[in-house]
Length: 167
Image 1 (cartoon, rainbow, N blue to C red):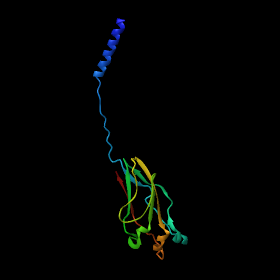
Image 2 (image 1 turned 90 degrees about the vertical axis):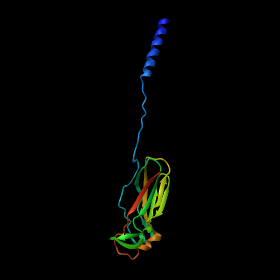
Image 3 (image 1 turned 135 degrees about the horizontal axis):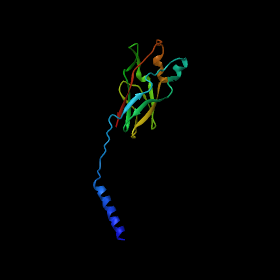
Image 4 (image 1 turned 45 degrees about the vertical axis):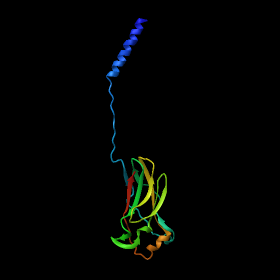
């Protein structure tokens, strides 16, 4: 029995010695710039090809994943137009940009706004997410097509700016 007792004491002592020689470290990870916004299709067209387009309006299909969001937390997406009126050949046309609507949807909500030269909240996600996609559709509703009657056959354009604000 004494032999067994001595072995236990020696084993305990060796174990205690290995604890004395151990060390702890504290690991810190730092991530910077973990947010971003990417538009997958930078050129979108709305076409008045048929007379019925002036009666019913025109719209793009829902552009799946049109906005790609990377965020370390919750976010808001704001939208605005570069100008108050559509341009043609860099000339103001008198057609207000608010004749165009932007419909956006993420996993939580769907929101439609009329374009404006002032930034406006398009949609948000209050949840902490790493990545998210936003589907977007552009339209000129039937009650806004009158701006395009009796116009020269040409291209009208504006620049749309999306802004990501992380919380």
